[in-house]
Image (tube, rainbow, N blue to C red; front, side):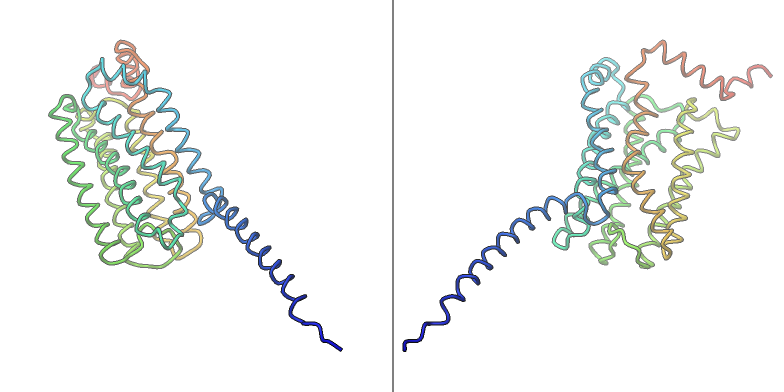
Length: 303
């Protein structure tokens, strides 16, 4: 009797299973890639909150662009013109940072994530420092000279900050921009010093506002509401850094980081730019006078 070969019936199912497995792998890879971009690393709600808020603010800037351009062109306000342009640039950087959160957890994207985070945080810090310099110059904040002085101070301080962070990240290999609940003392020590310095800067402005030197500052109470909010935020961030070895500290720090990247740019726009674009000069003077009167700036005139 002849014997039938045993290998023939076994080759077909093996080949089919291999093809099916390869197809499923490709499908899963595609699905995983789309899902990974939104949900991986910090989770879907973390990424969604950042992407949505930053996208909405850019959409708002686009809608207001034509009206804003006309006002800037007619007004010829050097400080506002440059500041508006910087807000646009930093908003685009911040939007990219929010959309590319998954780079933080992707090994091959570590360098790109560090560079993007360094430029984004430095842009946001430049806005903060320039506003503090603007306020501390008091009533001498108009004209090209004041603009040059404000941006020069901001550029020097932010440049030093970039160099220091660059040494930490690229020289010492300390993961400053990787958010995890580690206990790296050099990392969290630098962030604590960073928060403390900014708290002191905002504290100086608040001290002057509530002292006899208040008249030397710009007479707009909305500015000091901004300073109070930012000082409180940094105090909470400092507290979170101190408690970083606990789960609550990491949760608080992450929450503050989300709020900062999602809300800071709209906050400074509303505080410093919105009235400039929405009101005419006479109405602006009336608003400023009412705010100054409510804040007690004219109380000394009646004494």
